[in-house]
Image 1 (cartoon, rainbow, N blue to C red):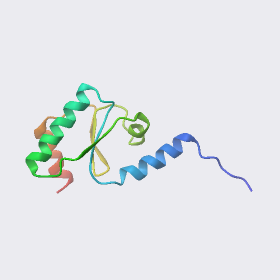
Image 2: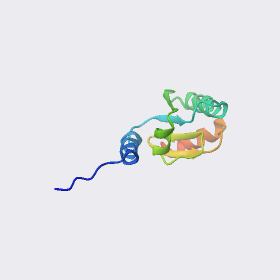
Image 3: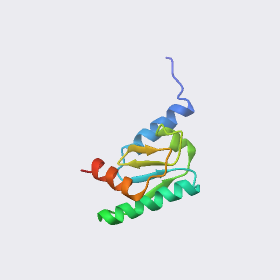
Amino acid sequence: MVRKKKNKSSLAAAAGEAEKKESGIKILGGGCAKCNALEAATVDALRELGMDTTIDHVRDFEKIAAYGVMTTPALVVDGQVVSYGKVLKKDEVIVILKKVRA
């Protein structure tokens, strides 16, 4: 009987796949000023739309990489990466949220 060993990256990918299926809003980033600015704009957009403003800020780079994101900050809505590599303004987040959650 031959057993295949799972390497670390496949385990991380499997964990990332499970996490992506969750609903909710996530900000992916190490906690820099740009990541915090995206989080603030997202909270403002959610508040304006009357949605739950609970946001998970993912700072673990292994988990961020599991989403396929190599440039932060990134915005994840209901498991779908909708933006990465730029700080969105509140109005841009509103447009994305309306589109994804329509």
